[in-house]
Length: 195
Image (cartoon, rainbow, N blue to C red; front, side, top):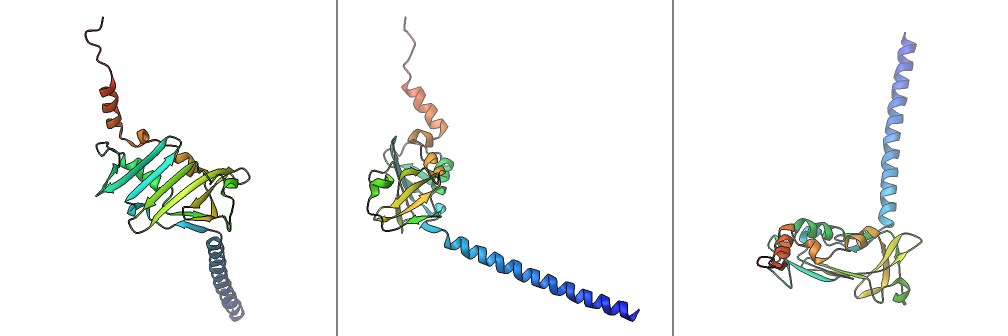
């Protein structure tokens, strides 16, 4: 009986030691993978989406420039337009903050990356920091787009293609549906009295 108790005590100690070792190993590998993932990403901007007060983008459809007035986004060229706050916020959240997994340094020829004349330019500002991002060509090998920052063109990052598709939007896409309906009605020709 004493021998069985002794064996049970030894097994309990071994089990506890194994659990402790397992916990230590899990924490060690979690920390190692966290460090590795931090090493494998580069910060493009640290601007928080909810702090952005200026937002603009230029694509093939033109330029949209917005300024936040209290809790409301105002279109800089026509303050009477009612902007869809949720859609504007969603767009801003795609680029603020923004990180990249890859970076190319000491770039001299922007044309190679489609950045001499970028297809898309995005500006976000929180009032203290202004970040202007220029997006060029698609990298066929990785499926990502090339991006550089205005004033820091010698460093190029890769970014998710979802950013480019999200910014295929126009001013009309960002105006509330009520506003668009009112505009459509005001442009219709009256039909009364026409024979």
